[in-house]
Image (cartoon, rainbow, N blue to C red; front, side, top):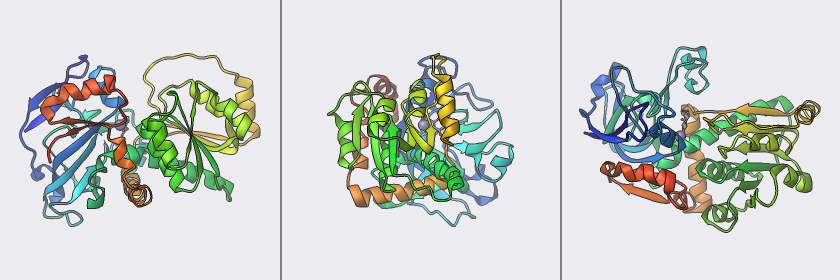
Length: 366
Ligand code: BGC
Ligand code: ZN
């Protein structure tokens, strides 16, 4: 079978490889699931991997098959798989267990190991291939009604984890009921976070860099949220004028905005950080003020990465609710399609140069 791989450590090394079709026998205890890949989405992580800033090949290989946002069709299951059957639409989680206590209880996303195993990212091959095999434990069923947008489930799982963890933390307050939220960033993660918060009945303001109107600001306004450009007003100034936020979800990829967000947080508020910022940017901040406001306001800031199975499942629920409530809204995020694995160069080109791109994905098969 064909797959798209990079040579970790070598810039712009994306290339096609030919591999043996995987078999369910590779998985122990009859728990294997063979998935025919239909679509794979790409994001900033894939861009960094092809830029040789991130990613490692599996042991025994000098290449890494990329792609961690997979959507596919079950083709064959092992004798002990009863929860899935051929013909089911599925998405696989990304991180596999390491050795920490958190991995042992199925929360691989909370690992404290220094080495982590992520399909398509670190030490494990990904989904940008014709087929993959995995243990049923890591494969989540997607209802057929979501088949056109199922490729968004992995990024949605990342959003679900951030928001669920924030609610979990806020149980400290006994009566916390967030009314106003801010989402920083209007890319795929920002838009999905905005959606998930709207579905929870919260007023949302999305802050983006681009001036409206454009597709992303339309998507924000179409579900009844507010779009503000940070070129006009900073997050902190907006909060000063219009009221502070109970919850802020940061997804811009621009780390300095975090300190601005800290100042926009209401008393008892929670700030969720989700941007994986690989650089080494420096900024000067009003340290005393930030610290004082956090102390006197009992505020929380929490980092979040990856997602375990639980969050893929709640992602399916939110995506289902979104289809019922907002019709084709989710599919409008799928802006750029690349047809076929052999056009892999286009995938990486669109990631950098795709005009008005929200989600770029490869249609691997139909
Ligand atoms: C993926 C996560 C992953 C993270 C860090 C993100 O792009 O969506 O699943 O944990 O990168 O590697
Ligand atoms: Zn990702």
